[in-house]
Amino acid sequence: MRERRRLFVIGLLALALAGCRGWTSSQPPIHVNPSMDRQPKYRPQAESAFFYDGATMRVPVAGTVARGELREDRAFYEGKDAAGKDLVHSPVEATPEVLARGAERFRIYCAPCHDARGDGKGILAQQGLPTTSLHIDRLRAAEDGYVFEVMTNGRGLMPAYRWPIPPADRWAIIAHVRELQRQRQQEEGGSTP
Image (cartoon, one colour):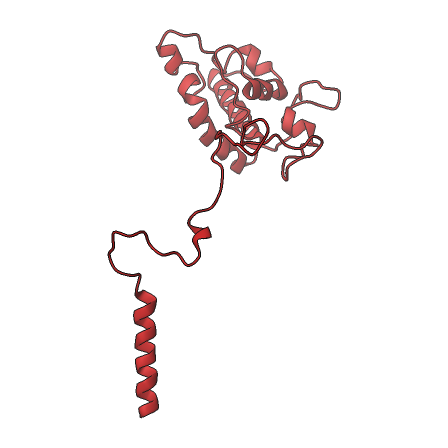
C-alpha cells in the first residue's frame, strides 16, 4: 500500500512538472537548448558579411545538378526532338487524369485571358487588349512542341510560365487545349485533327 501511494505521488508530480511551462514573468524565458529557438540562418535576398560578394543566395557550383533537376528528356522538358525541332505530338498521354489536371491548371493560368472555352475573350480582351483565340486555324495546326515553347517562354502579351507551371502541367494544359479544340470542331461539324 505504501509503495502504491509513493508511485501515485511520483506520477502526480511527474504530470505536474510535464505540464508546467513556468510562470508569468517580464524576464525572457530560460531556454535549456536555445539553438532550436535562435537558429543562425539567412533570409532570401539578405546581405551577408561572410561571402565576398555580399549575397546570401549562392550560385550552384559549376557542373553540378541539383537532385530532381537532371533534365535529360529533351522532349518532355523542352518540347523538342533530338534535332531541336518542335514535337508534333505531346510526349505525355492524354489520360483522363492528365485532362483533369490540364483543365484545372487551364482555369488558373489560361482562362483569365483566353476565357474558359479558349475563345480569347478573357480579362485582357475586356480591357481592349488583343488576346488570341485558341481555336484559330494557325493554333489548331500548330505542333504541340510549339505551344509548349510559347507557354514556357511567352510571346507578345503572354508571359512566360516556365517557373510557375512545371513541365508536366504544361503538357496537361496542352492536352486540355487540344480537347477544347476537338470539341469546338465537333460543334462546328468539322473533322477532328
